[in-house]
Length: 437
Image: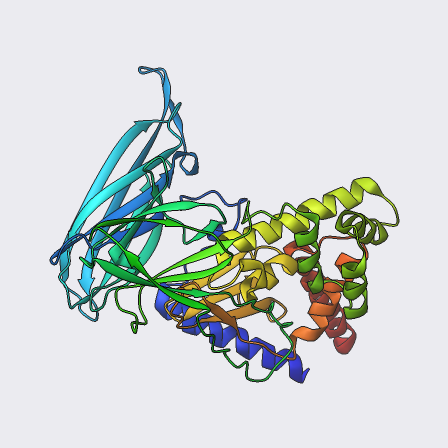
């Protein structure tokens, strides 16, 4: 009973903390394909001393498409609005509003380009609303713009076809064309070749020490002051800086080909650490043919049922891919705390966000049996997508249950958690009836 009361207090405290920051807006759609809402991608670029440009990439398929009988084509209708504030101020220094009614039969993606007044030496918050006018549905987004130092907002990355790239991670053999606003004839690159460990289980408490890493190599990079070509030759982190001693710059994360997908049998083995015993994992690595190792592992889970093994493989590695897509920071997303929880438990049905972090809830809000994971945002010079799980010994039982489910041939998900919650509530009601009887 003591554990239940303590956990209810944790959930309630988390709800209060995140609720004040974001008005308890459930943002579970950002990591789930099952909840259809517009999910734009943003990029800002400091194009002059007094202005910056907001680029917004929108998938037309995220909006409700309505057939126009007069024009005989499907159309979407959206409004993109934004207000720019100096950090800590309530008065907007700039704003914009764009409304469009677009045929989507041939257009899959749209990129909006908006000019904003933001001066060097200041920090800003850009508050954006994207409205699907056919659904009367709005998503909100906050973007930090730091103009006090040279940073990632002073660079734009283009591909060989001269298309703007919104990603921060790339594959070996990619060649990037980078526009920059540093006005420097020579930039510097620090290359880090660190192999980062995967996340520890959620019940492993104790202070997690940050590992200080050193650059494997530092080299200069000549530019024409506005543009340079950057070939990626190795896996690791490339940090591009205007000065050799600088800390802030643009980080380029390089992974094996086809990332964020996992396409080789050898790479499919590594995420299995989350659901296998140590000895079993070592044995998997010792098998000379990784394809055979993977097949045997999953067939063992399903007692030889190939169809069920195929379903398990699809679900597990789709979650690994989603973890890479959403949570990659200075290391691959599947190795991160959020990636670990996504892989084992699936996407949560409730997510609350604030500038301090994220709260994931499986079940119903304020239900004492709901499963809650809280992630704190960590300052990281390589990425603004680094979050650390607030671990607790309380998670050991649920972690073991989920792990056992995978090992017995069942992909654990939020539905399993909800069923567990309903069963606990049923038992509680029965115990109350017996007490009154």
